[in-house]
Length: 163
Image (cartoon, rainbow, N blue to C red):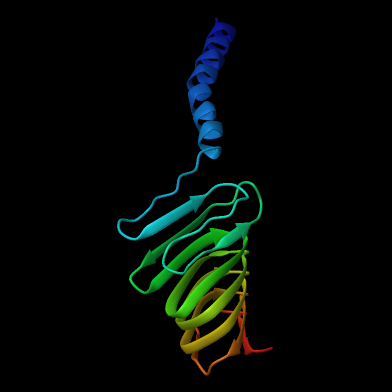
């Protein structure tokens, strides 16, 4: 009789765990991109070229599973991505906020201010006028022209004026 209880309990446990395992595997394949209201937006979930009005014009490439969002609000470009290579345009005096990790970005034009959050980003700028704020880990930031105030609020970041 004891063997029957154990066998019956094992079957019930397996039946109870099946939906949880199925849900766990199903959720690992899901992702979403939320777009805030206002401004123009672009969301990319594959290797494509994405453009945003207002001078942002990012051109992206990277792994097929990367997600990229670029939103222009007023005179500020908000760019978020994971593991992509992109070119962004600050035009003549836009501000730029970057969030994400493992990105390689080339920023053309003149940025008024720049804020960067994330890890292992490599970002080069043509010119930054006023301020560069970096909050994150192991980011490499290079700007060719300008004399911005630099706020290094993270750890392991390298921020240099270069050529």
